[in-house]
Structures are given as structure tokens and as C-alpha cells.
Image 1: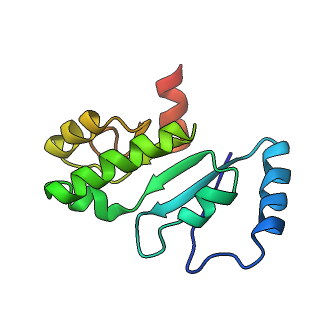
Image 2: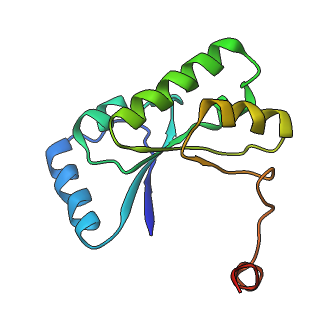
Length: 128
């Protein structure tokens, strides 16, 4: 299971928050930082918390045709991967965007270009 942290403002007691996250990780959960690069970027969390996965804000997918967004995303992905944190780009629904995302090389790409949403029976059927 992956627990996703989304923020409106940084957590006040970061050391206690870290302890709580580590206890969840000890129980087998992974911790994801959601909406990274949005209004509340999450750099404080990257500096202090044991994050397993960064999910980029949808704005990066929507504006991937903009050279500035492409460069930011590329360098954020590289930075995050050097910290041994996995990266995910979400809401990729166009083939042209899928190709650009593959060039950027996040660890995971999510969206309708990969698969439409499925119910549990469909997923189990795909596995068998």
C-alpha cells in the first residue's frame, strides 16, 4: 500500500511527522508525496522525510508542450532519482505526451495512454 501525502502548508512538527511516517514504513507502507511542483511544492518534505515516491502535479502533464515545463520536469525527475526516490507522472492521456514523458524517464507513467480504469475483476483477469 502507498499512503499519499498532499499538503496545503508544511507540517509544523517535521520531526514528529517523520517518526509517524517511519512507523508506517515499518508496517510495510510506502509513502508518496503528491502534487509535487504544484502550489505547495514539497521541497521541505524532501529534505526531512523518508519519501518513497513523488507524484508530480497534473500541471506538468497539462503543460508538457511548454519547453519550460519540460525542462523543470526533466530536472526534477533527475534530482528525485538521485535521492533514490521514485517518480510518477500522472494523467498522461495523449500519445504525444506519452512519448515526451518516456524521454524524461520518470519511474512510472499513469494515465489513459497506459490503461483506462479497470475494476478488480478485470485486473485479476489480466493477471491470469
